[in-house]
Image 1 (cartoon, helix red, strand yellow):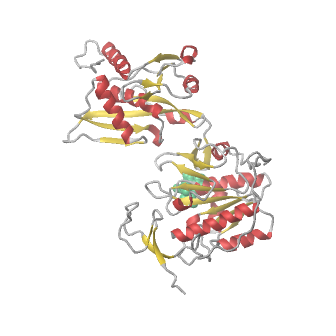
Image 2 (tube, rainbow, N blue to C red):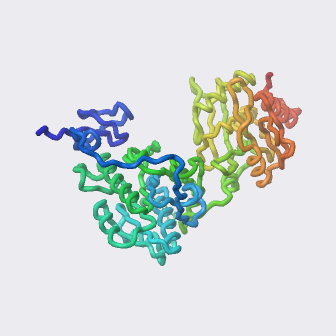
Image 3 (cartoon, rainbow, N blue to C red):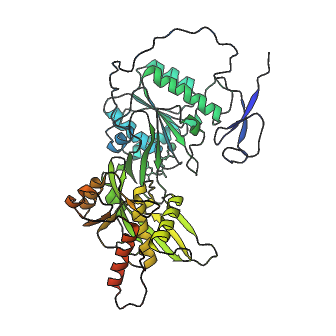
Length: 469
Ligand code: TYD
Ligand code: MG
């Protein structure tokens, strides 16, 4: 019989190598390879045995819509697409200490109060610690069933005894292990096998299982990254410890949209839902400072106003610095290039810093125009018109291109007391609740800002931005 061959698996990204390597060629992690037994999967068996015959079905069959288990925490239900789906598995990723356990214990308590059976398995904390947190949150009366366990077989056996739980929390998947593979807990092989076992449990019993996964600093779900494709939904819990708010973002969802976010605020009494995130992100805003622009964005189906801050200052180094927090650096490079090429501005001798206020991360190209406005405003040292929001995508030609959901963005701006918007030309602009200045080209934006700055600084010797085009 052939000797069982072992393989080396990168613990960061799951890359497989027949020999040990100091550095992973896939993800560049150092010293990340660990020897693990050859996984028994497809191809492990030599010959294909005789299979069972199954029936094939048509697309137009009658399958009832899966009922949802609604937690009652609306920001959470929004992200799951209207509640947890029975028999599905959700991976909840996030940095340690961000509040995953807090969110889940709150969800558990809410569901248990509605009469569902809810089981919380903690592999990281002792039962006493989980109880302590629940007491602090005022949830210790909720009929949640608790255990501190790490063996997948034991968990399945224990849960096999009583009624199938509606919701099973596994906190966290990195601490789980199964005896079907020999690797140590926390290794990729173990995490994968444990997740497989729990997914099988969910599929066969119809329980909804939530796996908690810790992510590394660069945002990868370490270890659990390799289970992302196995689960039905992946949500990530984000935020930084310097800010009190947290964002739950759907990354993958087989049963709902993936662009929804839920906004929470971490308080002394646990996570509180934020029903009006725009107000939160704009709070503490110094509207009169040069270099700040309010972007009317969209997160999923919800409009969200955020402040974009730019600082453009003469460089004291040979190569000017570009630093971005919360936005795509290559997108910033593009906006700068467009401003240089089509509006005659020069950033070559300036450091450029860009920050999305409040620690939010935005990915929408619609932020281009707001970023451009903030940059021009900072370069010119002049504040942008008050009570004005910006949105629009910039093309490489300098054209301002229309973006989706213009009406909703304008409505949200009006709701928060803004009076005007600078936006791409669109049909509904005339009947919008705020006055819309349509711009078709980035040079028009720059000319506007330059004009308002000369008006304000008339008599002042400081030169404003010279608008070209
Ligand atoms: P936790 O849910 O344990 O994080 P995770 O499971 O993602 O590692 O949350 C830990 C942090 O949350 C901790 O730094 C304290 C803070 N926290 C509050 O601010 N208020 C609270 O009511 C609770 C329970 C925690
Ligand atoms: Mg935790």
